[in-house]
Structures are given as structure tokens and as C-alpha cells.
Image (cartoon, rainbow, N blue to C red):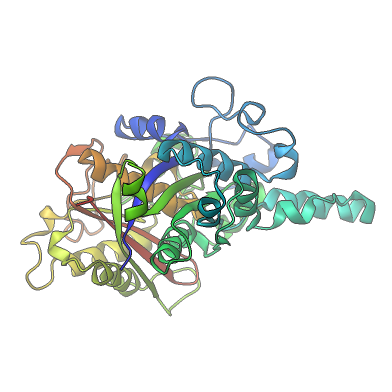
Length: 429
């Protein structure tokens, strides 16, 4: 079977632009969650008025589309597609993949998803249409709206003629994009895939909707950096965020033939469904358990070999508890780890919030870097694991990173509708 490796990384996150800056700030315990109540009266009136925002401006790590995008791109592309474009450029530069010959362009594809896409365009155009009718609708409305246009714009910019695809599976989108892209390589549809997810829907309507669904943190508006607290007993909802994560996946022999740096190997990809509820997980965590189990089966790896799990854990009461049960069920099974304290698991959402359709791909980037650097990234804001504490007895890498040899790691993502995915990465051997 064709093997798939990671040769390039790119990211736009609330910790700033670029993988290395984001990773450094993550390990330093920084947080990208800020107050948004001063942005508009609509935000201020909401029960949750905090978000993980990509910092703006021309200074290092800031988002400035005039410096980062080509002429006309800001007008043609919705913000989520802009984030995907910038993260893709970084990933391609990191991989040093600049194909020009027809066979290479035909063997390179893009798989870029988003959970919601451009809610701003939907809202603004609806208001304009209601007030002014047909002539107030931009001819770019539909192209900016369509989720697959992120992949389309990237393919057009670089001339990639391989698979051009998009996933939209709520908060599992980023992981599905990467996993599905790996299978396109395995089955020979491409030799190189630029894969990931992007999101930019920090909009009053989105926050209102999630707040009405009782999903968001509402008790920390005056202390934004403390609001996202995965696995903590005081967790009370997720913090909405924005950004993009992109990785370059490559067939192993193709990567070796051009002397590419290999960060890690994508060994397994598992999917499952809760088949239970629109927004709530099963209490026993069966769906996440099955996704991880299938990923390890596909990888041919025993659960006892897993050194680290980057959890989906969004800081919700039910979700974190269900995933915690699933992880312990998987790794403490027969012939598994001798105690829960040996299970290394963290949620990087404490630092960036929940990036919805981009979450899985950004967290895959973190998981790959943890393997490459033998560093466990921290769960910030974790003061007291639990509720009940006796169930939350793993090593959650509270507040500060830990050095550890990591040979195998899982990255989990779950979404509304009960959709689950787990990616299994390993050191390349």
C-alpha cells in the first residue's frame, strides 16, 4: 500500500500568522481569545462576547490582506478562503513544492473544507437584497459563498490539476479533509495533496445561534483568556474562533525522490457516527472510541503504543467528559497502559478557542509538531481536572508543555450530527 507522509505545514490562528509563531506562543502559554464586545452593539448584546480572533495589522504575526494576498483576491475571496490561501502558501513553501511540469501539476490536488463558510456574505447580502432588491446582489456573492471555492482558488493560483475537493462536516471538517486527502494518495489519484480546513464566522448571528444552543462559554466575558478551559471542572462551553490549518501530504516515495523533509507519517484514519443526537455526544463516548479504534486498526498500531492524544475537547461539560471516557476505554483496555496517569492528552483549544471547521486541521498541525519536536503541548487554564475528579485522572499536560519521546499520536475531531474522526500520526521510519 502507498504510504502517506507530511512534508509541509501552514497555519493562520488566533495566536498569529505562521506555524512557527503559533507553535512558539502555544508552548509559552499564550492565549488568542479576546473580547469582541467593542466591535459592535450586536456583539455587546450577546451572552458570549469573546472569540479567538486572528490578530490584525502589519506587525509580525498580524493579518494584513493587502500584504498577504494578490491583487483582487480580497474582493474575490471570502475571509475563510483568504485564510486557506495564506496557510496553503506557507505549507507549500515549507514543503518546497513548486511544480511546473504537467505530470507534477496533474498529480497535485487540493482538499480544503469549511464548516460554515462565509456567513458574513449570507447575512450582508440578505440585508441588501431585502432593502434594495436584485441590483444590490454582488455578482461575486455565490462564488464567495461556496465552500469549495477555497480549494478552487488554491488550485487556480498554483495550476494544480489533481483532485479539487471540499468537505463540510461541522467541526470534524479539518480532520475529514486531511484523512480523505490521504486516501486519494493511497488510491493513486494524486501524489501530493494540500489539505486542511478554514473558518471565519465570528459574526453576531453565528454567536447568537451557538448561544441559543447553549454551547458557548458565557461566564468569562470579563476574562477572555480564561474562558476556554478544557477538562477543567469549571468549564462551561466553547469559545468560537477563526483561522486555517493546512498540511502538505505526499506519497512516501515521491517525497524521498525529491529529498523532502518528512515531519511525520499519516498512518491511520478512523471515522464513526454517534447515531444519537444532533448536538450532544453519547455519554459513554462510544462514537469517539470507535473513531480512534478504527484509526489504530487502519494504522496497524496497538493502543498501548499511543504516546499522545490531541483531544477535540472544546471545554463543554458533556463533550469533554465523553471524550475522556472514550480515551480511557481505548487505552486502558486489556493489555493497555497500566494506569490513567500514563495517558498523555491535551486540548490546545484553551489557547485558540474552537475553530469549528478549521479545528481539526490546526490541531493536526500541533499533533505533527509534537511528534517532530517530542513536546507535549499544554492545556492552558486547567486548574482542577474533573467533575468528577476521579474520572479525570489522565496526564492532561496542565499549563506547561512537557518533553517526551512521542512515536505515535492521535488527533481527534467531532462535530454536530454525531460525526467523528481520528487521525493517527507516527514518526517516519
